Amino acid sequence: MLTILQEAYNEQHKKGGRKAKISPESKLVITLNYYREYRSQFHIAQDFGITESAVCKAIKWVEGILINHKDFALPGKKALWQDNNLETVLIDATEIPIERPKKAKATVLRQKETSYLKSTNCC
Image 1 (spheres, rainbow, N blue to C red):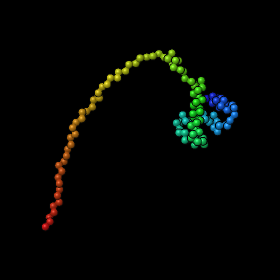
Image 2: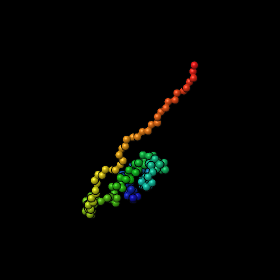
Image 3: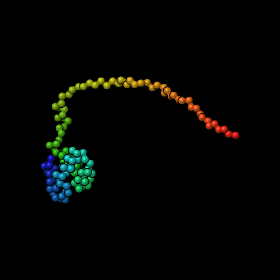
Image 4: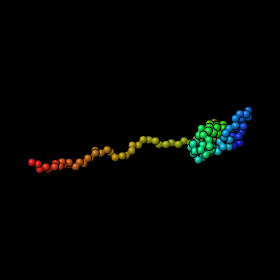
């Protein structure tokens, strides 16, 4: 992977231009940290002493280079269909009602409320 990234970096900078602050090796390490350890870009940026947007750009750059390289290319649809032996699987998906208890009338038990009046012996 590193040689692929080095070649891509040299191809982009063969006419000259400003050198990148992050080397292709560091970009690869950043990308592998991001995918393997599932760390946030903020924490990776803190470790490398760069901004969060620089981490995002590095990951996107490495992804783009590796996706477009022939060593990481997946076979096309035609190749997948040629080597594929199709099997038929039938699944019974009929709907069956779920047995659950019927809704019963709510039985509410109330206590007879008794009112208590103060007995006042007045007058």
